[in-house]
Length: 175
Image 1: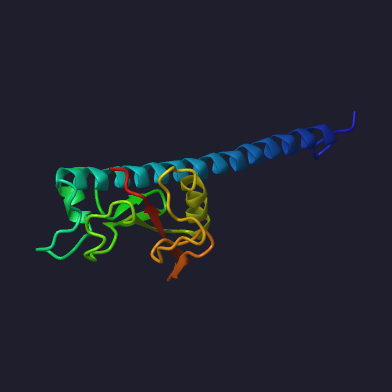
Image 2 (image 1 turned 30 degrees about the vertical axis):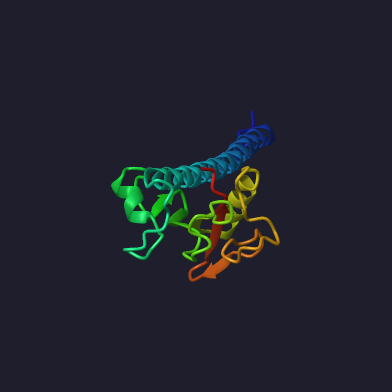
């Protein structure tokens, strides 16, 4: 009998098939991981939105603090344990600001026209996926052509250094 020093065609085919299956599983796993990151970031944004609403309710509906002359709630949200930290790092997305509207005299008591701003920074692909996820939210106010210039439309995120982008997600007040 003649002894062969190589692999048979059947052995090579089996090895190639196993490698192809492993590559397919790895590719599918990456898609599931990316989807989980977006879900986690959307949940964190919703938690932040509800935390801002809760803080405003605890203040008796007053969202602007005239003495301190600011309407950004990062410190208060963390101090009252409504969010774990600010900026809040979720997956590759950084939720860095939570604020409500402007401080004009007309807007102070007009909850219908003063949105909650939540600023998210991260990779463009993930921010776009997050925007698509949030646009089904019944209080989401980033529709194209929105009158508020602080709310960024889907296709117009702000470019920051190092391939990081910023989206200002706006939500109508619910309380």
